[in-house]
Image (tube, rainbow over all chains, first blue to last red; front, side, top):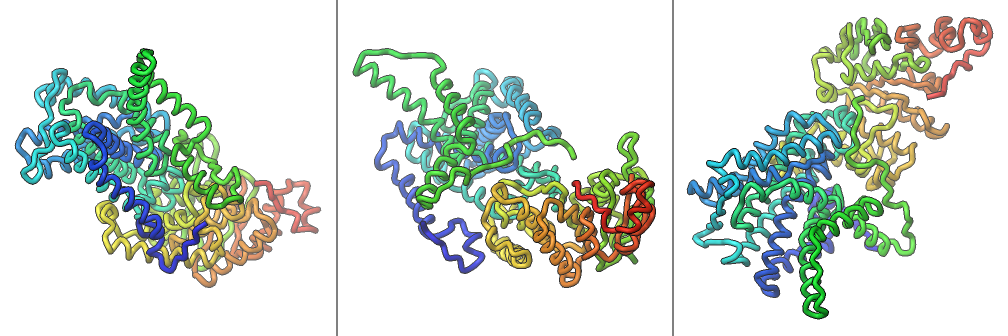
Length: 364
Length: 270
């Protein structure tokens, strides 16, 4: 086991606890940067998709995992970001301005729409946000002059420093754009968690009564969490639009909202890493199934094509996680690491949690 | 002028009058204890002070400010910090994090500086950390600094909650049953801490407590409540020997017997 000798308060404030930890994250970033050297354009597209979903999942994680407010409406925020981005690009606004703005527009619009329901807790809030998710498809159809409605609209390529970037023409550059956005969002998120605002989010998650008694303005803090959450989702939505190349009223549907929620639960609620692990699982499963299916067909001439198999496997993993590992995949990793670090002194109840997430709080 | 002044405060829940026309003043620098049988309205007084309830009648003034004009989250800004009868900590965070949340009212940053984590935010964070370390030293919480609340024993949680309230650097500390559920030794520690809080830190303490041993040891003045109304106010001895107090605890037939053994009036059932 490694003992970290802290000599200043900076050690607790810094991004990395010690230089070994910094080494692993820098290595990860280096691998991600070098990935295009080793893998083909198809898989790099999947990598980009993982990053896009990670950003969206981080948005939801901020609201659900760190502020304790469940949302089934994040596909709607992604849609707002996506359409805002496309509209601005079509109006001739440069991508470098249109892209961040699209996130902020999604954030502001999301906050305005959701403010009335932020008083609700737990399942009631989930139900209220579900309505938003269901409505968004209709709103996109109704707003046909801007969104193209059912017919949809083509997403223009990213134009950056005189270079046209789109997923199919220049997949590697598109991957780097996604990576840059992801790293930026991670940095903002990490800063948030070590500062007063992030702490007030956690306070609200764990006890609203006592957060209030510490001087935290509930409505204002929740609105901020929602704004940031919707902004991240909006950025992810804009990138998703670029990745898909074409969006219509069905691109951002209820299923996407539900999948985002499943992603963060599988990954591990309340951990930033959870957003990434969830996004990886979500993207890898259909890929692995497709490869497995092709393998069966070519090797044994067996053709399995069961509709809904991916969703079924995804749901199965979710159920197993909820039953046996409420801390998600990141929880599995934490436990494994602690087991080896403390070997042979690991105790089974070391990670016992008493409070269940997203409880429907009674008003005191 | 008194630090805290309640005038004719009445709180009703439907037909139940939880606090009935109570007036009290807490002077700066004293330890004021509220005692009384269960359901006397002690915790309701606390929740009124925290603005969780709005009284039907009466006024509450603190340090010249009208408390009733404030929202619950503005009360700590006046310098009022509180603990809860049934510990309300942030379960899924470490002790350090809990104490740092206590520093919320001293924050200087806003959403944008927090997101970028400017050097100013870092400097402020260090200041918060220093203030929190003082509390950790004062309450001997060094061993628990990085432990999650969810795994801590009851006695330690009680101390962490006290620490979180102290981290806000209050003028008035509201302690809701600081000794309930604590062992004899832990209660003694609590008594020493309350004394130090009053004498060294100069913080005024208003507490609800059933343990008359602790109340007699630390309090300057005691107020006895029963069924929402004031019975008696005075020193611990005065209140304990007051006939109305004895009647409230033991009933009328107990007056004579209890007159001989004033220490039997404890009510430890939380």
